[in-house]
Amino acid sequence: MEETTLRRKPTIRDVAAAAGVSRGTVSRVINGGRWVSPAAQLAVEEAIRATGYTANHHARSLATGRADSLAFLLTEPQHLLFADPTFALLLRGAAEALAQRSMTLVLLVAGTPGERANVAHYVSAGHVDGVLLISSHESDPLLADLLAGGIPTVCCGIPLGHQGEVSTVSVDEIESARTMTRYLLGQGHRRIAMIAGPNDTPGGRFRRVGFQEEMGEHFDPALVEEGDYGQESGAAAMTRLLERTSDIDAVFAASDLMAAGAIGALRKVGLRVPEDIAVAGFDDSGFAANQEPPLTTIRQPWDRISDEMVSLLLDVIAGAPHRSVTLPTSLVVRETA
Image (tube, rainbow, N blue to C red; front, side, top):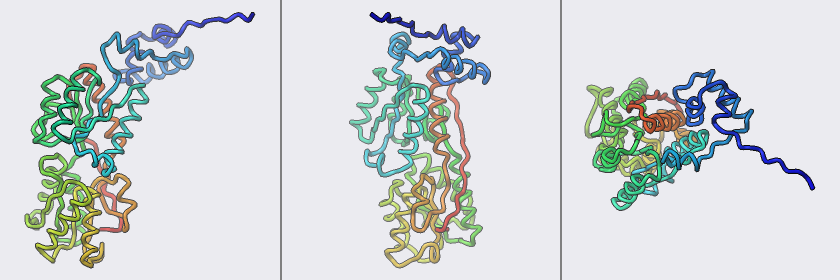
């Protein structure tokens, strides 16, 4: 009969001894590597490989009272999760960032009052350790409920009405809109229309502000329409603009989907892009490059946004004060403008 040897499972103590660091340093590396020197990080990672250590997440959850999962919370109608490619990019990035930390991402959609109530109950019951709030509306009480309940939260974009109260990861919406508007003005356009996002969202409000500031004396409020970031709303907004005036020479839409809708509306009335009217968007989520013609737009750094949101949220969960991170965008010139 063959002899079977049972090998003791390596512990954090074993990893710390092999790396020559404290158990607290090992724990910080396992939980994301915050506040750990590069040398200590490397030593712990090598010790983990050498000892064959794997985290016992069930035991850790029982000991810490944490779920080892974060919520990806979208406060929009469910169909937009699949219609808007920006949400899919953020979801993928957040999932990858958590997978590297052996944590789980829970997708929550709260586009109706009933869904918001369910979500508030779910997160307050401790099923997740914190919330990545992907979209926010000024009139939506959910963020206020999360903050009042002491739920660690990080927002994508600056939440209107709660500036300075919560950690955020955003792009400079105003300067990004000014960059695109400046580019269109530099191409000789003067009658530039804007299809803005909802004014109760940070992207809707601040991109509109940047557009108006850069247009200066050329700004005409009659050339501003609003959509919901979706393609159909962009087409409807473009149609309203064309009914109002016939001298538009360029259109800046606050999302690539609305820009695509505007192009469709222009084609219906026989106008060519860019020969008759230039069109520009905002996001560059992959959708823009595949349009015909390819869309000039503002590129957001989607992977960095997701990664920074996860890192900030883990910091907040660990007790760090809230802070905000602003990331750069870039102008991508293609055939529509």
